[in-house]
Image (cartoon, rainbow, N blue to C red):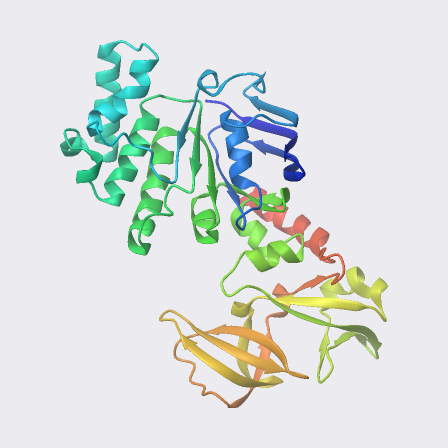
Length: 375
């Protein structure tokens, strides 16, 4: 087993910087997920760790060894690809054996490892079949089995569930969690799917434009985004942003949104008071917006029942759009005038020019203490 350390890692393709000074500590036996939109650099970062791309600058360490100059087969890693990459003319057993045979591993060792992996993945009855005879989920298990038999220091997984249907993805996420608990192998997993990231990871690294925007335990990052990109990317529907002018009023600070004013909670005043007279952006997640007897006036524009919740698209103030995620038994109709309130303990304030959080530091201190206590 081994930790993986990326230090100021850079990858350039002619005039394009795909990975821009990425530094990341991936603890031994952890499940770390690189998550972000298409083109953000997450797959290129994974390929650099794998040795499939050569870094322009920076270092990659596996354990105590810098591996920049080591070829892929010398790094003792195993990779699971998006398209599974199974040999169609070989049986399941032959696919799982192939990598070990190329390494010159003894037959007895190969047979034992294949048998153990097949039992772990519950594919013993599939060993004589060919990939074309398997379902998508079965092919995914075989691809995982081929990686497991190598007994690598690090598993690298590049969107391995993206070709599966929605129900099977949920099932395979649970299987991957169980697998990691069984093997305790350091795993680096790439996905654009935030739900996969949140449910699988010990830590997530949110990427954009080749840079890591924030690293941390998933629920911590969700609750304490460092900037507007992270806040917007994580969550469905994504966080609402309301931009207004911070003003001093008798008894406190308010943000004027043009049509209504919102009082800044006392816990945040010291962080935003230096911005009096300037523009700030309030961030509030849809699940922290509720229908109330008293509160801010809003007009219902769209009602989207989603089973476990109902998403409301609202307009507030001078016509600004706002989403609310409410209980399914909350009955409202399109065109109805309602009132809403925000959970004041879960608000965020951002600089709308830079996107940086104005309240991140004090929230980080609180959340770090909580996470440390839980562990």
